[in-house]
Amino acid sequence: MSYDFTGMALHTCRTNTMHRDVTTDNTGHCIDASNSIMEEVDKLAVDTNMTQGAIWLAIVDKFYMQSCPPVHGVSKHAVENRVKYIRGKQSGGNRNRTIEYPPLSKVKGSVQGFFQFQYSWHDNVKSRKDTTGIDRVVGWAHPELRNVLRFENLSWSMDGTFRYAPEGFKQCVSIMIYDPSSELYIPAVFTLTTAMTKESCLKLLRCVEACVGHTYHMLFISFKQRCRRKMKSYRIPKEEFKLVMAPNVFDVLAVIEPSKIALQGIAWVKKKIQELCECKGALT
Picture 1: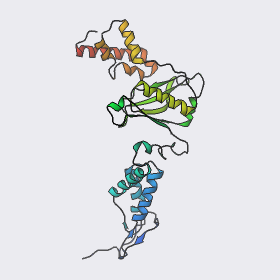
Picture 2: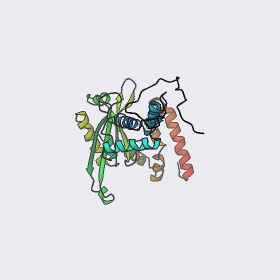
Picture 3: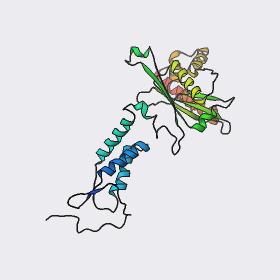
Picture 4: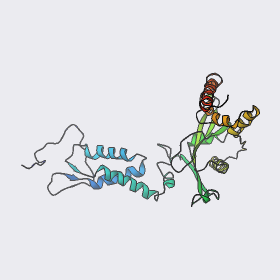
């Protein structure tokens, strides 16, 4: 027994949507929407920042879930590969260039730029280990928050305590602006660096100055170095200093509410240091 669709009625539970550029095959049983699907995939890949999975779901909803005759289309694997190809072609296969193109370079739903700068230079020290020897800094900021950096007598700082960065980068650094109304530091500029050196920090600051259009007079303070000097004055051994400055110990004070530092924060840090010293056999 053979089956076909000639005796079947269309569903009435969905709105019938006509597709462009679709053709009926010789048997008249289904329509070929492959070209229309690929055109839609290309458009979504270029004009949106949707993931491959989200684009596939959008294609399914638009072409396969409507009350039309059966559709001959493309597979999920083909759609995902098409998205990779189109986005790779747009950036020339260079991941660092991808962020320079819309929609990733724009504020969502706006023509304003979220991507602010990307600067690279050759580092002679790095070139001894890396064949290219290229270091890079990349920065993003919302224009309204970026413009706040132009104000006079502004208090802001660089926060490099984020522990994770995308592949190929060493550190995520944010520039925090002090907000008097909330008495908190608000992140205004987000950056990625491929190195954790003083030179990369200076390059980052120069890029921020060029981005904002304002020259800053910097006061460089090494938090870790100042802590070390203070502990030396108390004759605290170097081994114990390393325990104190280990991740999730003393640096926790930088990420909790300021009102809780004096009591809960310091008490917790003291207890944590005591536990680490006992575990390592160090004197407290």
